[in-house]
Length: 375
Length: 53
Image (cartoon, rainbow over all chains, first blue to last red; front, side):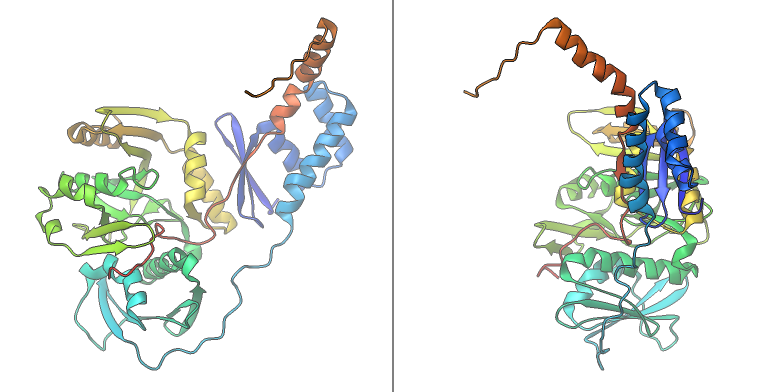
């Protein structure tokens, strides 16, 4: 059954379809019917077993199995043509307005940008990694536009082109290429990239998740000031061995959080401010401290965080199913079958928590207890 | 005010309705699913690069 994977998750089952890269949460009985359909078992035979199981008339069972096949199995097993695979025609500019050099994990990455617009898409997050110009570079990233699309070329190879509406995918791919370059691992050697903040304590990592504005980055910065180490903010890569690795982009800090963090990070006061017009959002970037590229960390738990002034601290374990529903739509998960299987195995064994707080000291203590399995 | 349609049904009819529901409740449960699509590609938090650079 190489078209799908089925994994039990609590009292339900998750079916992953390779061709659509879609995860579907179903009842265990439904998963078993899907499995039989994928194995080309006859509809009659499957319906018969359903009649025995649910004590329903044959006609209802037959309709159900047929519908399931039509709604879930067939649409998810037809081969989709690869989107965005067409290589657009482009001409690499002869000169670039900006030429920056970044030192990341002992690699020098030269990035050239054709306009200030392209520069503004990535540079603020990496400004703290800028180094002096040199001819001895490891990778060359070229970023330019043809008035409609923003292009990314890495070492002469076309990576992609993105419209303005999809520019966060350009930024994501740019970061992915940085990850691939500094760890020398191709995209298919990663299990996924998670929209989270990752912190390290002793030998483990924790992923802090939550909707935008819930305080992921602020919590990360607060924890960093308490001696926890930052592994990544906003873009958390996990390899196929389930290890969280460092991604050294700046931690984005919103104006409200500046007041909270200023005593720990006085440099934030003078830090450059970037204003994002459409979102009416102003952000400063805080360089992560003590980034360790050599170490990889197993993930101890997922913590869905929320900063709420009306709650001193409230923590509870949540079901993996509930966490799964929040995690998947917000993540890039490799669609290589082995990696999707690896993801399901990894996730099904992961404790998940909901943590709401306004008392920082209590939050630190709770995070420490989760790391030390004392909660 | 919104008009509410009131429908009187006999006990027999009500039982018939519940009976059908009860019988197929299990089928309804197995026919309920949640679709989850991961992101098509890696993405950063959506940020609009405005004029502030």
